[in-house]
Length: 307
Image 1 (cartoon, rainbow, N blue to C red):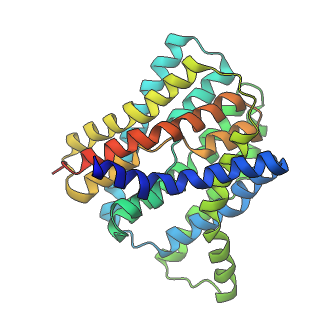
Image 2: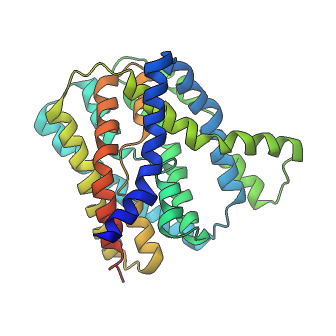
């Protein structure tokens, strides 16, 4: 029991406090969620993505293994949620919202500090999580934007929106500059560093602001389905894929942990930015974040027994 309490107090509660701060600020000052959403999409997220990729020590072998795991896991999870969507008979907007609430998970502002706490700042496990974060930043800014707009917008307009997302340019630029050892001018890098350091606090506070501004029209069945798929089916699939590929040690543990985190803030940002089931998306993020206190703690406990 003491181990569970340690994980809870040192891994999960610090993140939850920042979310709670956002709720309090929203209740007190009625902040503009659209502005916060744009700051996350166009400033904080690109900055931390560039910095982490540019500074990372990613080997080609590790990157290929993690990418293989990610794509197998992503499509397995996509298949699981697609079965549920068809059984439930969701309409177009709700279909994309349910998919996004399950396949987009909080691989950055929740998983990165969690990874660093669980593995005590291990650069190897951090590099694994950075690759996952890279993909989980790229896909919401491409497929995610497409999914919430496909049923109501022409393809040309949707592509125009996707091409306006800075993350899709930041990722290849950062990898190329790192690969060819191209230095970033010092004054520019100082600015990037300042912005990147504000990402976790701003993103978690934004989530709190959205939660604080919700109209609580509960969709208990749909939210519960999303939570079970994200918090229970996700890490189970991760474990099975790790087992199938024969991964072991810290790599296996880091990959399983990466699958266990709650629904991503990006699903809320997409829902708010493009007015696609924002109530359901907010509730899914909120409830998965709350329940992750227990499920993530349990997963962290279990991965200690992974060989």
